[in-house]
Image (cartoon, rainbow, N blue to C red; front, side):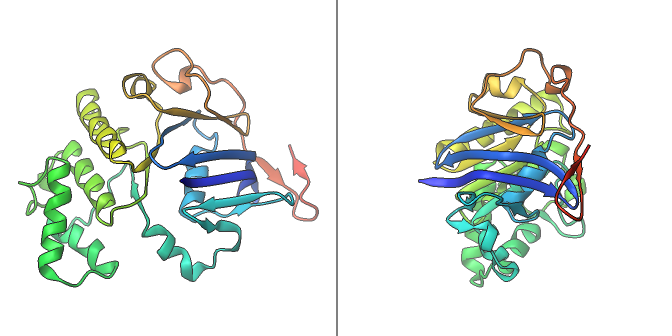
Length: 255
């Protein structure tokens, strides 16, 4: 089953050209690493998957389809329905600091239509158990370590049994050992058949936990490529990644 299907797509941010001729397919159960230098377009591409950023389909055969939804014709009122089919994990956690873990997760379920208190309780502790945090349900975020907070964020992303998990540098603020523990959780999630797409600068993770490699370089996306040598993409990728401004009048690219 195809989870994402992009063909000849352009990614722009306001009047800046970020990526062009983006073509790839991601299938159910794929584990994809999205790598590239800072400013190369990784996060912009990821944002298009959950309709935070628009895509442009400039050619007759261009299309951008995520979870069966055509992004080029997606209406704003239907974006929440698309997002309910996926889970998103951010580097900076984004937990509600005035609520405990249970209430953070309960807020998400209630916002997506859950009403039965017993089922809400069961679901929350099911996902907390999956990430090894079932004893932390009533802790406040400030009482948790960074690694524990990230585990809660993964649990939050799993609440609605998503077909797709998007993770933007989920280990970026963690020490190596804690980061490795978080990667173990993501791999376990991937083994259930859930598709995972993860942005990372740490090239150790694809070596320890193999997956497909997508690389943003030179305003293009290279699909299923080899890993560069070294511990970090920034130490090896020297391409000019400066976005290009687009002319307002005729879509001419201005260098």
